[in-house]
Image 1: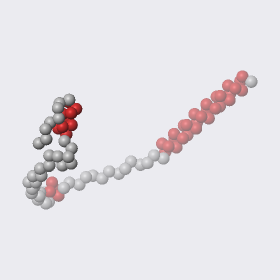
Image 2: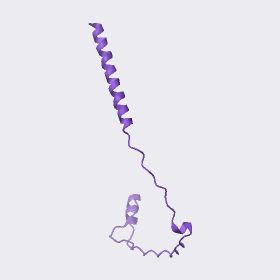
Image 3: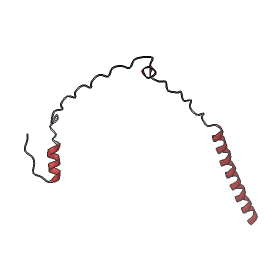
Image 4: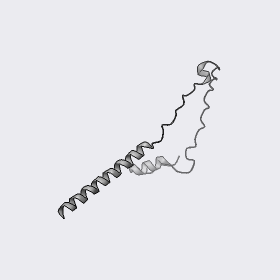
Length: 89
């Protein structure tokens, strides 16, 4: 009886190992092919076939209102530091 138990355990390990090996081999055989990468084409202005466009000056940024929604971060920071509340502007 002892030999049958050992034989059964060995067969179980052998079947498990064979299953893992076959599944791994199948997965490796059916891998997706690597994607084809196309070479990047240069800009026509870089090759000299077209002149480079003139760069426009950046537009000035509009001034943002100091407290657009009524929330004052300076007062919040003052409260968090323990300072007295700053007077309104």
